[in-house]
Image (cartoon, rainbow, N blue to C red):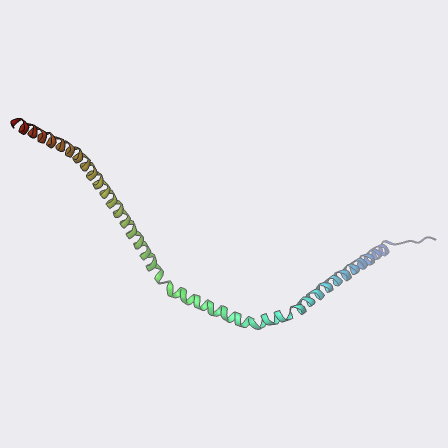
Length: 151
């Protein structure tokens, strides 16, 4: 028995096989998608109370966000004109601190120099004072010796 197959019949056969394969693939994909949908459904059922609570609170949350946004906008609008003055005051305070620091440094330098000069003068005077005391003691002993000799 011999059978002849034309190219057209072969092409139709291949298309049928391809269609069957595609059909099987689609069935598997739909089955997996169905499993995912069942898991999502179970998850929603498990969290139904939380989801409902969140949905009920959503308008309050949205109104709170709007109120906070309005308040922040008002505060920013109130503060914005003051910012240049604040920066200027800060710069002025910084300059005053700089000047005060320079004055304190200068004063400390002057006091240091004065203390060094006083210490040097006292040191020199103490040495000179010691010399004066020795001279006075010698004069007294000369006078005593002179008085002792006259008696």
